[in-house]
Image 1 (cartoon, one colour):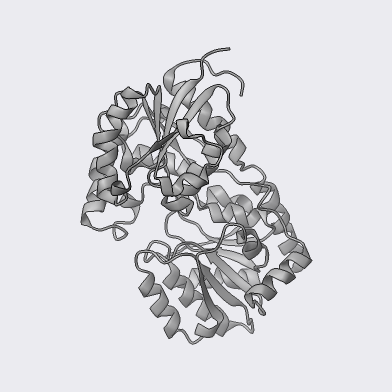
Image 2 (image 1 turned 60 degrees about the horizontal axis):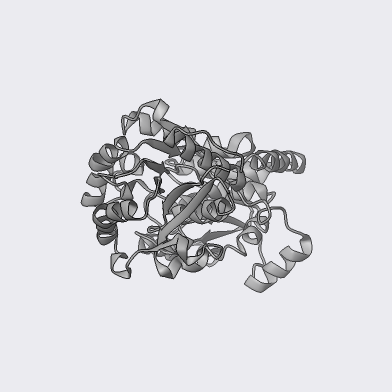
Length: 386
């Protein structure tokens, strides 16, 4: 048997596994731990150690707690990590976020890039983060040996904005845990609704409360118009932890004539997330830009209709199952909600079945396998069977 390839995957920016990058790292790492052809090690904070229970201490490279903040985290990657790569004899470094790409890596480096938001949403970031994303990040990405994009949309953005050659980029879609996300039983849903006091039908948007990129304010205004135009009593659930600009969203909810029907439950525990989806009339996903848009796939897999923004990767991720709208038009979002409301039971069931079939094509096991293959391709060596 060939000697396994020694890989270091940085988990130093996963925010307790709560962010999109965090979910990505946790899902892939815990699947690739069993691969015999690679010896996967992780660099991370000890506070995140519990997210990787199968990794023994010999495969854990602790990052000092003093490097928790953004700038100090970047500096640790740039100044401390290169020497550790040489000392510990790693063959390849996998960075899952372009902000941590090493300017001078002593070993081959692969990066996963989820989106090019600094180019698409200039109001999303402050001056320094915006300049880093638009000026320095493309230069850093061009220093990598290979790049994984999580969607075809992101790949095209990398070609257009980062000026990366197409041959350097491989698309590996994010996955889905089908043992967690599936249609729930009536008994489970009744119990869940009773637990959370969900007495009315509801629409749900799962996203951190971030303004303006996640587009909550336009959704709230479209929801108000929808309620005024119809006899629907459906509630709106905005699930997610507060983030930059959350106060703007919270203040807009408080001013709404339907404020009592707009729920802000905060961060949703992943164990209950399938029930939040399955109990909803639909997922409404108005985000202005997504490199992938995992909630869309999760909701489809739970047998729920989706009404989604038509921007970014979302049509790629939602396929033919979703209803789409222009996220910058309140009238278009309202029309999408009204289309959902007026669909016949037969059409709704067809859409649900199409969504289940489409969601079945996304799988974290497949994503892990393709990512592992990218390691071998980057090193120009033949892969062995997992």
